[in-house]
Amino acid sequence: MIIAVSSESDQGLESVVSAHFGRCPFFILADVEGEEIKSVRSLQNPFFGHHQPGQVPGFIHEQGANVMLTGGMGQRAIQFFQQYGIQAATGAHGTVRHSLQMFFQAELRE
Image (cartoon, rainbow, N blue to C red; front, side):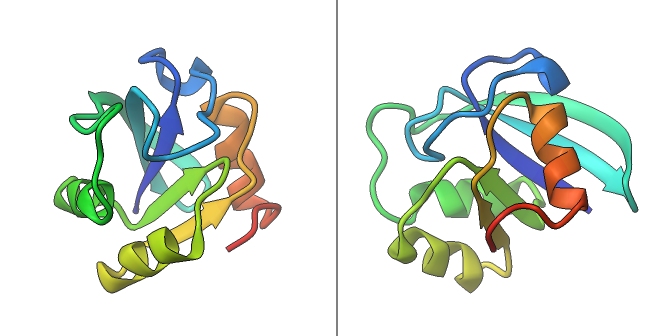
């Protein structure tokens, strides 16, 4: 499973989670198996600062992500992710590593 996390930097698991998926400069993609993180990569958000509704969910879908973790997003954005079969979870904060652990422990809102 690939989990995308909105991020303020490209520091992998130590990146700070962005409060909003569409306004983040980076996405961290974690390839996980169960609760084990197999690999991590950083991607620049090509829509940083100027996204239109639906663009970011489409981009995340193109990366093969199954889940999107972020601080927050509106209902319309959640619906866009659902159209692509991507589970959206909000309430993520702290580092990417911390947010992944929160997701594994079912502590984020889906």
